Length: 240
Image (cartoon, rainbow, N blue to C red; front, side, top):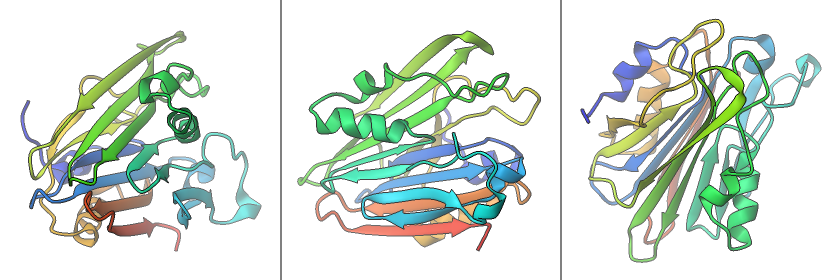
C-alpha cells in the first residue's frame, strides 16, 4: 500500500466527515493520535472539544442553538489507566471502555453496535484503541461498522490489527469517501499515511490547515510516550 501524504488527502476531500489517525512518530518513540470532526449543518457545526479527566468530550458551543444532541454529543477519547486510549466518532467510546474495563475485548464490544441511525447516510461508526506497554511499545486496533452499500437493513463490521507501526507511519480511517447526497461511506482498508511532525502542535496545525475551511469543526491531537505516559496534547476548535 502506498504511503500517502495526509495533508494532501485532506485538501483534496471537502468532506471526509469524522476521521481517526493513529500511528508512530517519526522518531519512533511515541504514539500519535488525531481525531477531527466536520459538519455541514448548523447543529453539527455548533460544537467544540473540551478536556475531561480521562480524555475529551464534545459539547455545544452555544447551548441555545443546540437542536438535537443525539449522535453529536459524546466522548470521542477516553483513557484507561494511562495505558489504553480509546478514540471513536460516537458513544461507542463508552461501550468499548466498559467492555475492556470488565475484561472484554475491543471487537466483542463493537459486535454489540451498528452504524448510526441517520438514514439515508447511515454514517459509519469508526473506532480505534491504542494499548501502550511499560516497555515503550504499543499496538493498535481500528474498526468501521457500516451499512451494506447504503442498505440500512444490514451492518458490515470490519476490524484491523496493527501490532506495530514503522516510525513515521500511521493509518487513517474516516467516515465518508467524499461529500454527496446521500454521503458515501468510507471504503477499503484504512489509508497508510506519513507522520513527520516533530510534536503535537505542529501536526495539529498541519491537519487543521488542510481541512476544508467551511466544514471543519474541531481537532484533537496527542503524542504519547508509551514508557512514561507523558502526553503532548492539542485541541483546536473553529468556534473559539
